[in-house]
Image (tube, rainbow, N blue to C red; front, side, top):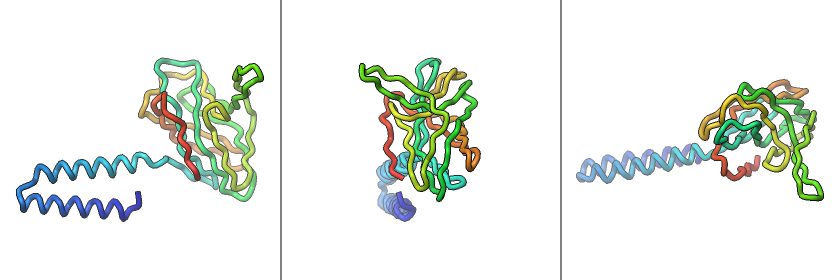
Length: 183
């Protein structure tokens, strides 16, 4: 939501409070103000989280919540190379799991899906790499604790050219559909 929209909404709410106090409709005005505030806060929360460091932009890193302690869990995000040179993602690190690796899901002719470990991923200049369910993703193994919806945890991406970039991964509802940010 643009800043001017928030300011306009705040002015409108302030105007309604003054009008209500003058006219004796304070309770109704407070309800309307609360509804407006909830709308503004939900619009702000719905915006995708992103980090931009050293010419690398990471958009909406997330993982599904776990019900119990799983053996592993995937992390998804969009990575944008805003530099004029190729970038190579060579690894990941986090404190919530014993290991983090890059994987790609492939489906064999018989319909069985397998994850293949990837040592390095090259992102061409000005290109986008999407880490998505049933595609390329970060795989966390041997989690220390279940991942609870609404929490976040740090994940460090390691690039050969620019070093480390740390992001906060949002834990979303396990049934959440993959977001489709378009940087």
